[in-house]
Image (cartoon, rainbow, N blue to C red; front, side, top):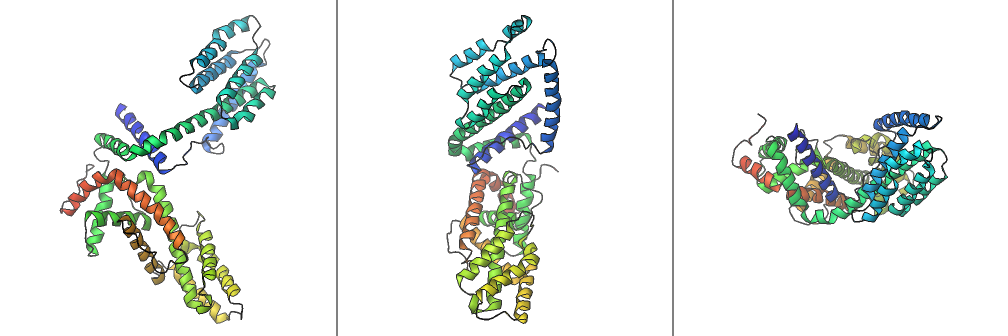
Length: 423
């Protein structure tokens, strides 16, 4: 049990470090109140606050719950005070003396409003300026239960601000050593889980098998390039352990690449079907924007799915471009037919452009910076943007997991079956 807990801690640290390196805007956020967790929390809190109110409405008031809350507030404030600010910590301990409060309650001299005022003034000195209005509004609240509720809400925000500040402060130092840090953490995980690379071995072995079946030369570089391309071309199962932390990013790249290729294919099909009159860039750019916007819908599993809804919009763009005469019915039908052909996964135009995009990505990952492939001139900026995301992902991943890949690929290229620790 202790080993499992240690592995979970290692995995959490590895995940956080990786997210910090990959996402410069990473910030922790409050839980969604509309989530299941949020609803359960609201129900539990409502019952608790009802019990606090019931105690305060007694004659004389029962402050038992209130003292527990004040003690918890005191602990949070001590955590929020910077480590070097000993005077502030001493002040909190001196003023928020729970034993003294108990004596005051017994003597009927306890001043809850005075405690609240001290807490609010201290919070204003600790919080980010953006939180000032939220905290000041607590003083205008007369209901003691709502005061407690709002104090805890503000303290949650302040703790969140502190965590995000610490993350931002940590990032520069982490970036300088991130590859080695992640390698070391992953090795620690492997030490307790010898089967921790089995899925990665399957991924690379299957890629090698496909390459050999297609008479492609297999080397460490070509094998890794082909394996990474598979991540944006298909759903790789099982998910390789070395890819798991970036799976959502590779999925995003795959969606964006499909949208770019589909946009380029649509433009070529229309230009071929309509003729020279729509060859200029303004027409192509209208098509690109229309297709790309529709492809951005997260409910669309593949750009081909938008064709039933987009054909008429594209025909409208053609009509707007050809102002010298109306489109004939047979021309409209021909354009619809050519567009419907893009729904086939084996459409030759789409497949040709997809292969060119793959070669472009592979060349970039090999350090060869070439021109944007033919057929992507209008979508060049889009393609280069997706390629930049892809090469960054691949480069960082290879930096962290390169030694592990090298050992696995050495077994594959020497003719051995990669050893599996789970069998």
